[in-house]
Image (cartoon, rainbow, N blue to C red):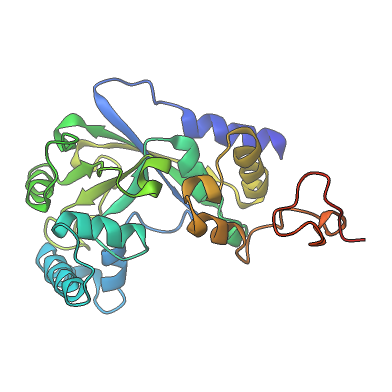
Amino acid sequence: MQELAEEVLRGVQQGSDRTGVVHVWRGQGDTAWPLYPGIYRRLLAIKSAAEVTEELVRKYEIDMLCEANGFGYYTRGRLPTLVRVQHYGGATRFLDVTRDPLTALWFATDPALTSKDGAVYHFQVPLECLLAEGTMDTLDEVDEIAQREGAALLFPKPDEERVAAQRAGFLVPSIGETLAATAPFAKGAYGFDVSKVVVPGETKATLRRHLETSAGISARSLFPGVAGYAMAQSVGEPFARGEDELHDGSYGIFPGRGAPRVP
């Protein structure tokens, strides 16, 4: 098991020394999941892939922005609003990626999916697809590159803590004809070099422990604040302490190292 986990680690970090491209990674808990942004998956619940077009995606996106504005959640423009919705779990045209392969591996080792093999995708993105950081930050500019190159790569301003913590970016595809005819991020699409490392389900716990203890990557580090703490206490996460190590509360809610444990 240890050897298999080490093999996965080597595979995930391989190939990042190529110059002239931008390297980003994405981790998924189930290798069977397609590389679809959330809004594509949401539309596939009501439409066939042959019915999902770029025009339809934009119609639903505009509707969502109008609704967000009606509820008072529209923030500083279309792009910042979509980035915020994406980071809080909304379905947008954005596909989450990261500059850090180990962060991607953390997402691929979801403990709620240990019965499934996960996957880490490595995208080597042509520089023509990259929005210049700090100079191009409107949705029109994202769309211009996506339509010209097939996809755009965006690194948002780190005004959300988790953006900086996850070294987060987004791939924003553009559907050519229909989703059935154009599979986003299939190998070779848009001139990308896309590789995939399968993360066997039986290695997920070993890899997750390694990432947390050796690389300092955890829910609390990737999701700063109460969001990360709450994730660390979720159903699929192991308890931080064994039963014989539990704090008994007699030293208050911030026990020190010498605090008594539950007998």
